[in-house]
Structures are given as C-alpha cells and as structure tokens.
Image 1 (cartoon, rainbow, N blue to C red):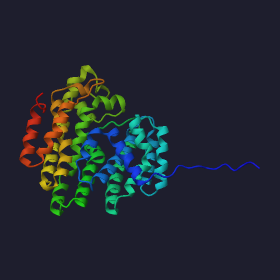
Image 2: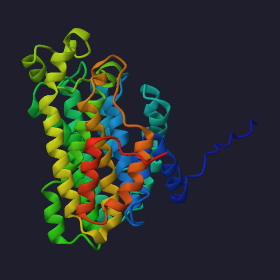
Image 3: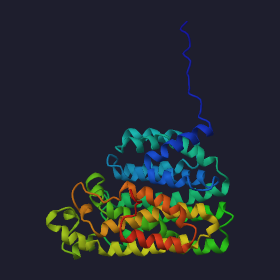
Image 4: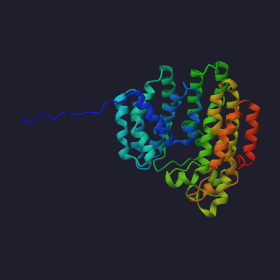
Length: 353
C-alpha cells in the first residue's frame, strides 16, 4: 500500500511576526512616512502604520498598469472583503501574479494577510475608524478606475478636487479621528476645530505630489491629473502635456492648481496650529510632510522639470535632513512654526557645512 502523503502547512505567523513584517515593509514603500511615524506616541504608531499600509495596498491596485479596469474593481472589492475575513486577507496576496508594480509594492501586497492581522489586533473603535475611511477611499478609487478605463484623465478642477478627497482627504479624516480616540490632549473642542481643515491637510500633500510628478504619472502610470479644461484654456491638452512646444502653455495651466496647493497648505498649517502644544509628537508628525510640501512648492514655482519627459521636482536630501531637525523645535510654538515656514518658502533650508 502506498504511504499516505502528508500535507505540511507552514504555521500561521504570530502577531509579533506580523508587526515585524509591517515595520520592515513601511520604509520600502515610503521612507518619508516611515521617518514620521517614529515620532508618534507609542499607542498611535500601530494604528497609523496599519492604516497607511492598508491605503498603500489599495493605491497599488489602483495605479497598476497590467490589470484591466474591471479587474482592478474586482480586486478592490476583494480587498474590502478582507476586513470581514482573515482567510480572504491571507489569500489576497496571490494577486501579485497579475500586477506590474515594483518589487517593494508587490512585497506589500503579498503580505496583505499580515497587515490585516495587525489591523485585527487593534481595539474595536480603532478598527472602526480605519475601516470607515479606507472603505471611503477605496470606493472612490473604484469609481475613478471604472470611469477612466483608458487611464485616468481628469477633466475639471471639480473632478480634481473630488479625486484628491478620495485618495487624501479621507486620510486627513482617518488621522484626525485617531488623534481624538487615542490622545488625551485632543479633546472634543480641539477635534471639532481639526475637522474644519483635516481634508485640506491630506489634499494639500496630494496636490503637491501631483504637481511634482506630472511627467512620471503620464509616462509611468498612464495618468494625467492636470484638468483638461485648464490645459485647453491655456492652449494645450492632455495629449501635449509633455511637449516642448507647449511647455509655456502647460506651465500657465498649472496656476490654478498652484493656488489651490497654497490655500490647502495654509489650511494645513491652521490644522497643526489647532493641535495643542502638549500633543507635541502628533504636531511633529503633521509638521514634517507639510514642511516638505512647502519646500517642494518653492521649487515648483521656479521649475519646469515636471513638464519635461523623465523630469521631476525634488528637494535635496540635505534639506530633508535639516527640516527634520528644525521641525522638531518648530513644534514648540505656533510662532516658531510660522518662522520656519516663512524661511523655507524663501530658499532651501540647510545647515552650514
């Protein structure tokens, strides 16, 4: 008689192993976010990390070039089903065989089960916050994917703002609710004040990222987020977004988005100023990406590189390092924060030598 073949299955990873994997994955998909999250109070780090990784998994699906729009919608639906089923979350990573993202993002998607394992370790109210806003984000992503089957092409400023709400304004809400849930320094009055500007806090960063990555998005992700009506009014169009002979027109078309970015950055600063100084670690977490956005806007005002094939606008690593150090002291008062903001707007902020 033939011996029965034993089926050997790998043991399910423990929560501590899942936590370790998520910490290792975070800097691979966002060095900047990984830097900022270390600044948070210990009780806020796990939910913010889990929330970010969940959003990044969904974003990887939305941006993928290999999957057809209908398939992306199916995958986004399957991703949301992972909130209710650990088995579905463990199986979700198999979809990487269909995707064309880089190795770091594929590694994250492959570990979806581990990310949801850390999510399920959170308390009930925290899970509810993450689930609500990730679901809102994914629903918007799904709609945009299906509405633009040949690649996202934003038509109007209203559609641009709607897109930014779904992919970034929702994050502003998610974080604000986590501050209220987990910080003794964010009471009801502060929470109500933060709600006024929390969407702008997320959307400002998204708008700056869109402006600096115009060429990358068009060439690498088949997506053009600059509204076609702005381009047409300036004498250009989506099909000419990177053409040398239309560069002046394309630059003019960006003016309304530059104004929008400045307005949302100002509201982001009001958001930070509304956080009590006792919540210094939360303030610092919020300050750093806004400082990076302000520095990037300074460079965008002076550059056309984002409108050149293969081009992009970035701030120097030396300035990033200097802002991390300076930001840690600028959180002490709103006055020192405003001083640093005004300084960064004028010229690159670096330390001598």
